[in-house]
Length: 541
Image 1 (cartoon, one colour):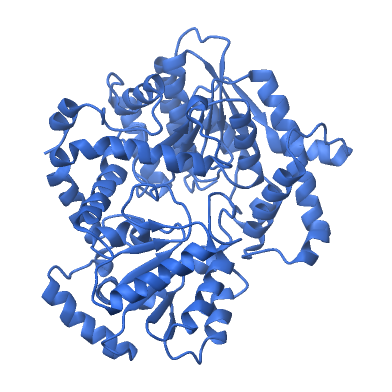
Image 2 (cartoon, helix red, strand yellow; image 1 turned 135 degrees about the vertical axis):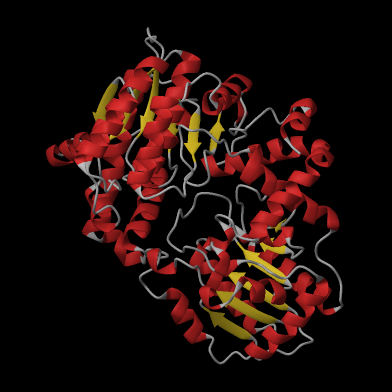
């Protein structure tokens, strides 16, 4: 558990949390249940999940049951400091009524060889096993021979066991809601798949900002294959509901845009701090700096520059609609296409945290393969300043990266080879078939070469409105959830302990926002009612 504080400070916080939640949960809870997942070792994630679960308890009167435990392979690969007993102590302090150590139950079933009935198809089991093994091995894809590997087959058996155990838990508690920090891989994704199939609302708590959460209610489903695909449509619905009120939000949206330019927080292409500030403010400044960057990189001044943003290649594979089989295939095929288009320069940038997602050196090998192509450049993204990147790029290309909303806000068009949470909002071009992708690239190059525009003023405004929604309207601020950037853990627990001991709960934004989301069946938490023009005018300046 990411909680490097001594036992005395931890115990003091547990005491404050116990008293706070004893006084702020229903005194006589009903026999209904909320399931909250508590697998993650990061205290910030656990606090978010548990707080949302308790807020739902206040709305519904339901009890909560927490799912705890740690997968041995996840511990070995990512979570070396995991402390099960501290997690259980934290869960108990938050007033959770029951705790189930799912991983112990799964391990027992695996040891006994009794995996139980499987409520998922073979294809669904394969998909979860494949994505989990890729993430654990830090590889972009599994070679065919790996599918017969004992480690892979063991993971597949584990997916089977998870499905059986989760089915039993859902049968026992028939929950009113599931609260989880993740919707991917085996230990989270299988639970989400089963909950969605049983028409249980799923609250996906985000690991960024103050407090963000997306919720899929059963009646809002449209038949998409995955949770994320369903949410793409629903998030766009909330965003479209803002459009008639855009004039009321214009000043606030510009303020948020300006803060984003100055990189006050993530994602901002996974950078932050003054060293990453975007200082270029006028067209003349950008044009002059563009010439400098082109000279530095040895690029002809007359050809368009297309920036291709690599992804965390092993992360969350197969979780939304995409043009290619995996992220590595997309990047590789794009490089092949680019070599055949010498009428444009192609700048391929790795993910700033690439080492945490790929141990195979895929990006470096790709760079070596295309080293002789005069119109291709492969670079470490952190070797290129934000000023240089945004001055030189005529078109950004990604699948689901955060640049798909950041670049349009700056007036730079983006082509997405797949869906993201914002891809249905209209400020980027989105394709989900290879043929459409190649055609879109071809058209874009022709338009840029002819001096045409690929983005409209309306799309630029739309991207800035999205930034307001993401960073402000759908980011709930409460003393019960310190901002994601509040660390180390000792500081976080100190702040939270003071809030629980000294601040009264009446009207707390978390409780208000969760109640509004639940009663109005909205797909995301919001600071205030985004459908009410009067509320918007009252809350923005």
